[in-house]
Amino acid sequence: MAGRTLKALIIGCGRVGSAIALQLQQEGWEVTVVDENEDALSRLGESWPGTFIVGHGMDADLLRDAGIEEADAVVVATDGDNTNIVIGQVAQKRFDVRCVVVRVLDPARARFYAQRGLNTVCPTSVAIERLLEAARACALPPTAAEAAEELAR
Amino acid sequence: MYVIVAGGGKVGANVTRSLLRLGHEVTLVEQRRDRFERLEDEFEHQVQRGDATELYVLERAGIARPPDVVLALTGDDEDNLVIGQIARERYGVPKVIARVNDPRNQAHFDLLGVSPTVSATSSVMALVEHEVPEHELIHLLELRRENLEIVEVEIDADSPSAGKSVEALALPEGSRLISVMRGGRAEIAVGSTVLEVGDQVLAILEPGKEDELRRVLLRR
Image (cartoon, rainbow over all chains, first blue to last red; front, side, top):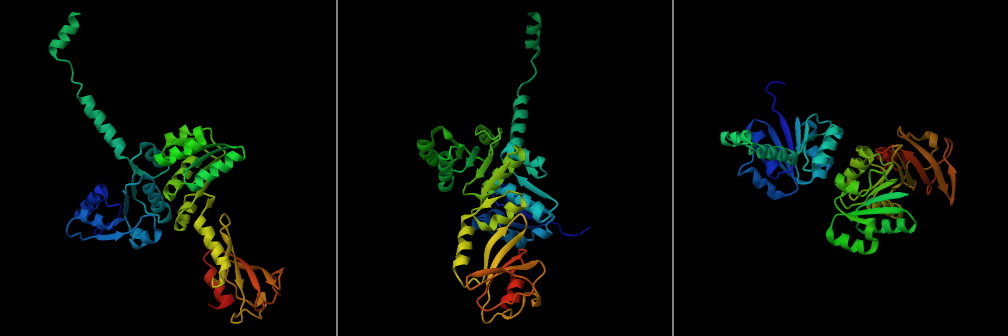
C-alpha cells in the first residue's frame, strides 16, 4: 500500500467541495471533481491539475466514468441535502466505496442517516456547538468586588 | 385510511382530490408558497406548507401515527427517495409509494428499498414500445420483486427460430418462452411447440438477457 497514490472523488464543487479538492490535491491525492455547473471549475484556480467532470452525481454511469470504483474516498457536498444523502448511499451500497463522507445541513436528517451507517457531517450542528461554546465563554466569572458584594448581603 | 401525500404538483393534487372523494383522510404537504396558497383554497386544513423531507414537517403532518400510506410524489427523485426511507424506516409506515421522475433513477429506488414506484415516463415508453412495431422486443411487464420481466417478440421471415421447436432453441439461461399467439389464439409454449412466422411469443427472463434472447429468436 505504501507509496500508492490515494484517489478522491468530490461531488459538488461549491465553497466546501472545491476547498476539499484543492487541499487533498496539495496533499498528494489524485482528485476528480464532479459538478453540474461548468463554471464551478473556476473555484479550483487557474490550472487545476486534477480531473473535472460536468454532470450530475445521481448519474451512475457518470460516477463510474469518474472512477468511483477505484476511489479511496468519496466526499459528497452538493448544495442539496437529499441529493447528497442519495449519492452517498449509492457510493456506499452500489459501488462499495469504503470511505464515504456526506454533507447534510439539516441536523435531523444528518442524525437519522448517521444511525443508518452513513458518515454524515453536519455543518449546522458544528456551528451551533461552536457558537454555544463562544456564548458561554462570554459568561465571565464574577469580579472580586461583585463577589464581596454578594457575600455582604 | 390515513394518507400523507408529499408534493402538491399536478400529480399530488389530483391524487389528493381522488383520495378525498373516496372518503379517505389525507394530509397534503407542499413546500412552494404559490402552490400552497392555491391548494389551500381547495383543500383548506388538509394541506400543510413545508418541506416534506424535514422530520418536523412530517411529524406535524401526523407521520408518527403512522399513516397507512405515504405517497412521495414530488418532482424531485432525491426528495422522494428520502421521504420514502424516512417514512418506512424511522416511522414504520407500512406502505410507501414513490414517484420516479427520471427513469434512470429507478436503480437508486431499488437499491435503497423504496418501492413500489410509479413513473409516467416509463409507462409512456412501455406503451410506445408496445405500439411501435420497430421495437422488436417489447417490454410488457416488469416483476420487480422477482427480478424478472415479461417480453413479447414477433417471429418474422428472417428469424432463425422460425420453423424450429422450442426445445431445439438454445435459449439463454434464465429465460423461458411462455406462450405463442397465432391467428388470434394463444397457447402455452411447450418443448414441442414449433415457432412460425407471424407468431407473437411471450417470454419471461432475467433483466439483461434481452440481447441473448433476441439473438436466438431473431438474430439481430
